[in-house]
Length: 490
Ligand code: NAD
Image 1 (cartoon, rainbow, N blue to C red):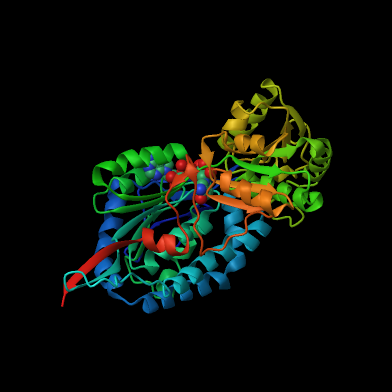
Image 2: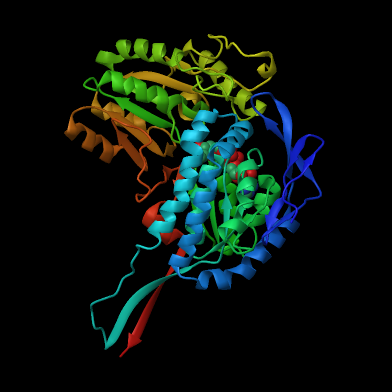
């Protein structure tokens, strides 16, 4: 088995199909965001490679799907153990590939990837189906759930292994086989995980990973007639294309998309805790988390105090070399993305905004080796109207905007006044107000007095342009299986 190759000092990845590493004729450059240099070559797969992977997944399906949930769970647990044993190695690789700090990868991405396997290994053992009590025409009615077949899984670059395993784990736990396509910008940890499949006991063809771009590899996967289900995490624009491509085949779709998440801060909030958490919710992972706060609405009576304290705290959020544990943020994913985020700040200025700290205001002190990296400091903007582009569009970088409100109704209207509906945060010590706000906000997830606390048993997903469907515990189980109603006359 050709597992690894180190040609001319680049890391060269290979597809993982039917339990083997298979080289690809063409490759794409993948950059280290902290230096701006190419360090890895990623297969530029197309329909041919996808076809081979789907064929391998189809072949593996009958045997894998006939195993008991307990048997599959054992393998998921073993895979989790193997990744955990190499936690630091995976964290370093994720940091180099994505630009995030090693600390973040070590504390968030990789432990959560491990937990995804452990969680679904356990949760798949605890679901029950329905049986009707009604003896209708002498018949017994009950339901069973069956795996769907070959699952097509497409993931983005911001939390590479975390989001890929969030899909692979429930898909295979429930008896499907998969063809996954990670983002072409962050493929390394997925490839490293493939090296552990055999040792974990994953049979050949159960997990296939095809690397490459969305328009070639991703499109071929979505359009493949033998892939009846697609779970996608990424941008709203790509989701529209995927919906169109899969429509002729009536595929089962789960779409986890972008956000423009509000934090609504009332005057009775615990301000110290709120500021500490809201800095984290705005800037963690360079602001490249779909759940990051990008609009902060503050009750007018504390607006001035909040803004002052928040800007001071944001200035302390350190950006720099990802391997330095004193840094909170590393580099953004790519030069293009950095330019896009910077352009939003320029646009904010032209839309009448004030930039209090960050881009264009504060200089970063970077070592010579990193001056071409894609770094950008935590940026706070105020003074924008709710209809401005910067307040409406997802930026997906270390930029957040602060604005005042007067009444609860106004806060709801502002929070809901965008096309997205992924997450919202409410800060208040008034329980009644928190419940009212949570009910009225159009968001798939509402956190109050905290952020990013996730119980994987509960649904995850967005409303409006933030997604279709939910995943997590029972919801993942439902998505990755088909329910069948059985009626037997006795
Ligand atoms: P993207 O849509 O550009 O790419 C996501 C994935 O889709 C990549 O693997 C890409 O190669 C693939 N792809 C692109 N075009 C395709 C096509 N035509 N057919 C099939 N696949 C295609 O998104 P991105 O820039 O990688 O990720 C950032 C976006 O993801 C942001 O909008 C962010 O909010 C969103 N996101 C959402 C969640 C969530 O859970 N809701 C989580 C993380 C990121």
